[in-house]
Length: 125
Image 1 (cartoon, rainbow, N blue to C red):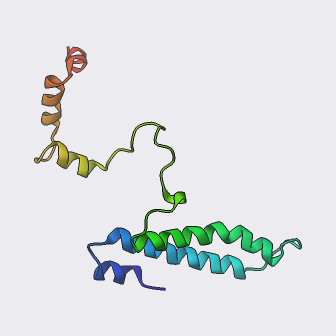
Image 2 (spheres, rainbow, N blue to C red):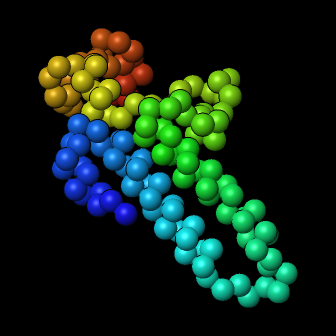
Image 3 (cartoon, helix red, strand yellow):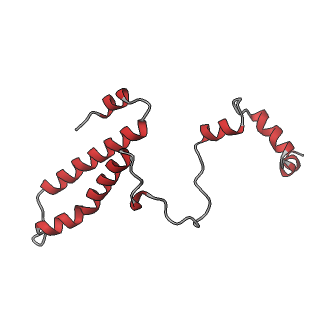
Protein backbone atom coordinates (compact mmCIF):
# COMPACT_ATOMS: atom_id res chain seq x y z
CA UNK A 1 0.00 0.00 0.00
CA UNK A 2 1.57 3.31 -1.06
CA UNK A 3 2.30 5.88 1.61
CA UNK A 4 -0.15 8.77 1.18
CA UNK A 5 2.19 11.33 2.77
CA UNK A 6 5.04 10.33 0.45
CA UNK A 7 2.77 10.57 -2.59
CA UNK A 8 1.61 14.02 -1.50
CA UNK A 9 5.23 15.15 -1.14
CA UNK A 10 6.16 13.69 -4.51
CA UNK A 11 3.08 14.96 -6.37
CA UNK A 12 2.29 18.09 -4.38
CA UNK A 13 0.43 19.69 -7.29
CA UNK A 14 -2.04 16.77 -7.48
CA UNK A 15 -3.53 16.41 -4.00
CA UNK A 16 -6.96 15.31 -5.33
CA UNK A 17 -5.34 12.54 -7.36
CA UNK A 18 -3.27 11.39 -4.38
CA UNK A 19 -6.37 11.46 -2.18
CA UNK A 20 -8.31 9.36 -4.72
CA UNK A 21 -5.56 6.74 -4.88
CA UNK A 22 -5.28 6.67 -1.07
CA UNK A 23 -9.06 6.27 -0.75
CA UNK A 24 -9.02 3.40 -3.27
CA UNK A 25 -6.26 1.62 -1.34
CA UNK A 26 -8.10 2.20 1.93
CA UNK A 27 -11.23 0.65 0.42
CA UNK A 28 -9.14 -2.26 -0.78
CA UNK A 29 -7.89 -2.84 2.76
CA UNK A 30 -11.44 -2.69 4.14
CA UNK A 31 -12.67 -5.14 1.50
CA UNK A 32 -9.81 -7.55 2.26
CA UNK A 33 -10.50 -7.35 5.97
CA UNK A 34 -14.23 -7.94 5.54
CA UNK A 35 -13.68 -10.84 3.16
CA UNK A 36 -11.26 -12.56 5.53
CA UNK A 37 -13.28 -12.00 8.68
CA UNK A 38 -15.26 -14.99 9.94
CA UNK A 39 -18.98 -15.03 9.43
CA UNK A 40 -21.44 -15.52 12.25
CA UNK A 41 -24.23 -16.45 9.89
CA UNK A 42 -24.58 -20.05 8.64
CA UNK A 43 -26.32 -18.79 5.51
CA UNK A 44 -23.34 -16.60 4.63
CA UNK A 45 -22.11 -18.50 1.60
CA UNK A 46 -19.01 -17.28 -0.25
CA UNK A 47 -21.13 -16.11 -3.21
CA UNK A 48 -23.36 -14.05 -0.92
CA UNK A 49 -20.31 -12.36 0.61
CA UNK A 50 -18.97 -11.48 -2.84
CA UNK A 51 -22.28 -9.90 -3.79
CA UNK A 52 -22.27 -7.76 -0.65
CA UNK A 53 -18.78 -6.42 -1.34
CA UNK A 54 -19.33 -5.91 -5.07
CA UNK A 55 -20.37 -2.27 -4.62
CA UNK A 56 -17.23 -1.57 -2.58
CA UNK A 57 -15.14 -3.14 -5.35
CA UNK A 58 -16.94 -0.94 -7.89
CA UNK A 59 -16.33 2.17 -5.78
CA UNK A 60 -12.63 1.30 -5.43
CA UNK A 61 -12.30 0.80 -9.19
CA UNK A 62 -14.21 4.03 -9.92
CA UNK A 63 -11.77 5.97 -7.71
CA UNK A 64 -8.75 4.38 -9.39
CA UNK A 65 -10.19 5.10 -12.86
CA UNK A 66 -10.87 8.69 -11.86
CA UNK A 67 -7.31 9.11 -10.57
CA UNK A 68 -6.04 7.89 -13.94
CA UNK A 69 -8.05 10.53 -15.81
CA UNK A 70 -11.19 8.62 -16.73
CA UNK A 71 -14.59 10.28 -16.69
CA UNK A 72 -16.38 9.84 -13.38
CA UNK A 73 -18.33 6.60 -13.09
CA UNK A 74 -22.09 7.09 -12.87
CA UNK A 75 -21.95 6.40 -9.11
CA UNK A 76 -19.63 9.42 -8.67
CA UNK A 77 -21.63 11.85 -10.81
CA UNK A 78 -24.09 14.31 -9.33
CA UNK A 79 -27.69 13.24 -9.55
CA UNK A 80 -30.12 15.03 -11.89
CA UNK A 81 -29.40 18.57 -13.00
CA UNK A 82 -32.79 19.96 -12.00
CA UNK A 83 -32.49 19.33 -8.28
CA UNK A 84 -31.80 22.87 -7.15
CA UNK A 85 -28.85 25.15 -7.51
CA UNK A 86 -25.23 24.09 -7.73
CA UNK A 87 -23.27 23.60 -4.57
CA UNK A 88 -21.47 26.67 -3.25
CA UNK A 89 -17.80 27.01 -4.01
CA UNK A 90 -15.43 27.16 -1.08
CA UNK A 91 -15.22 30.51 0.71
CA UNK A 92 -11.56 31.32 -0.17
CA UNK A 93 -12.22 30.65 -3.86
CA UNK A 94 -15.42 32.73 -3.82
CA UNK A 95 -13.70 35.57 -1.95
CA UNK A 96 -10.96 35.73 -4.58
CA UNK A 97 -13.58 36.09 -7.31
CA UNK A 98 -15.42 38.83 -5.44
CA UNK A 99 -12.42 40.92 -4.44
CA UNK A 100 -8.66 40.89 -4.77
CA UNK A 101 -8.37 42.36 -1.29
CA UNK A 102 -9.24 40.44 1.87
CA UNK A 103 -12.94 40.94 2.63
CA UNK A 104 -13.46 43.04 5.73
CA UNK A 105 -16.56 43.90 7.77
CA UNK A 106 -16.41 47.45 6.44
CA UNK A 107 -16.37 46.18 2.88
CA UNK A 108 -19.47 44.06 3.55
CA UNK A 109 -21.23 47.07 5.10
CA UNK A 110 -20.39 49.13 2.04
CA UNK A 111 -21.74 46.41 -0.27
CA UNK A 112 -24.93 46.16 1.76
CA UNK A 113 -25.44 49.91 1.52
CA UNK A 114 -24.66 49.95 -2.19
CA UNK A 115 -26.34 46.73 -3.40
CA UNK A 116 -29.42 46.03 -1.37
CA UNK A 117 -28.71 46.99 2.16
CA UNK A 118 -32.05 48.81 2.47
CA UNK A 119 -33.36 46.31 5.02
CA UNK A 120 -30.02 46.43 6.80
CA UNK A 121 -30.13 50.24 7.04
CA UNK A 122 -33.66 50.11 8.48
CA UNK A 123 -32.57 47.61 11.14
CA UNK A 124 -29.76 49.91 12.28
CA UNK A 125 -32.18 52.77 12.92
